[in-house]
Length: 85
Ligand code: SF4
Image (cartoon, rainbow, N blue to C red; front, side):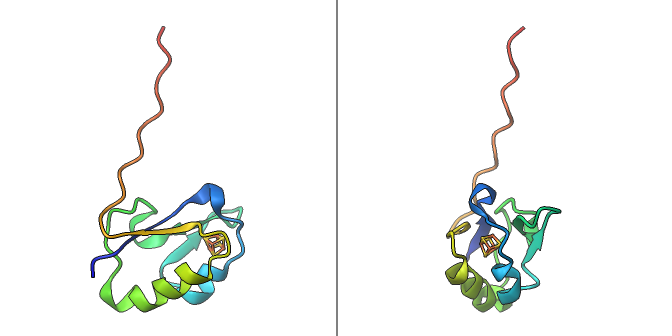
């Protein structure tokens, strides 16, 4: 099954559990907030078949449900609106 992943970073509490479960899939910023590493947290690249077991372990262990999954790519973030002058 094709699976896409993304971390909802405003829900991440920087606990580090996802990297223990799937060290090749998650990276952290200087504050410990996680991101899905293979596609820089864009949710645009499918999780590799060989990584799906590790991903699902991280997904189920995340205490805040910050790790999101989908059967299709996540929509690209919309750029902030510029104020009208
Ligand atoms: S397991 Fe969840 S809360 Fe913990 S660092 Fe990973 S994404 Fe953040």
